[in-house]
Amino acid sequence: MSDSLDAYLVLSGMLFAIGSFGFLARRNAISMLMSIELMLNGVNLAIVAFGAFGTAASAAAEGSIVALMVMAVAAAEATVGLAIVIAIYRNKKTPLVDEYDSMKQ
Amino acid sequence: MLRRLIPILLALAVLGIVTGIAALMIVALGQDWSDALFWLFAAVMIGSALLVVTMKDIIRCGLAMIVCFGALAGIYVILGAPLIAAAQVIVYIGAISVLILFAIMLTQTKDAPSRLVFQTQAVPAAIASVILVIVVALSIAATDWGEAADRVRLATSDLSRVLFKDYVLPFEIVSVLLLAAVIGGVYLAKREKGGPS
Image (tube, rainbow over all chains, first blue to last red; front, side):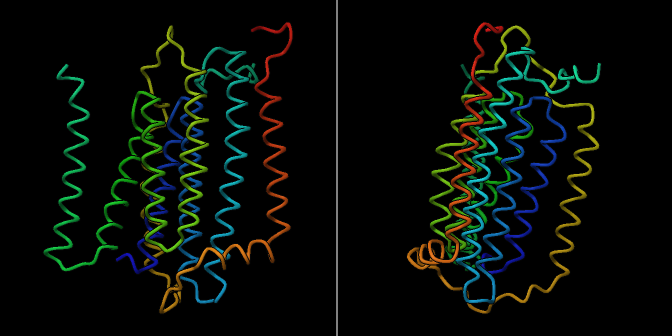
């Protein structure tokens, strides 16, 4: 089972779906950021699995390199996202996203 | 006291059941170690990911996220990418999780404890996620990927040779992006002088 690409891809799809559920359903902004991290991890697993099972000679190296780039971009995203959440929290005094409706008024 | 112990006992029971199933697979079904470890890590990863999106206490969500990332690092090792597993542990468990836990501690409100965890759209979101899993699984099963007959175990020296020879420009661009993100994060989270504390 651990020698087939399908198992890894289904696993990454499940992780992505769990993350998307969390992003759509949670009220807390930091929970939504954690769900985004879960989704990025699912995509990363798919990339590494495609690289490891690829037919080209350089596929494994390239898959790993793309996964490393995704990790760096995810770190940048987490930094900026959490800074934005903290900046909003300082103004609105709540981490719940359904209270952030001042742009509607 | 006993109520506090219930989650720990529950976690131990789940871990015992999963380990027992893995041992049973090795002994009874004659599968090898990597299969059993794959199932073990996959079960831990999916279970803790579900805990991340469903638990009420957000700091426990953050800790479950660390468990999920650790199990994913194990899956990377089984997949034959040890450098990615090391980067996963360093970047996700070491850096991003700590950042998220700090942000949780900075934004916890004692006066308004939010007992309502989910939005009103939680049920449609759950249905959509289940449908997404089913569609993805069906399309994966229906596709012939043409995968390689024998997998190459990549040495880290080969990987670094490719990274620093052919992919130097993306590497440098990503480092500049990280620097810009760090500066932007410091600027955004900084307190303004004279503003509301």
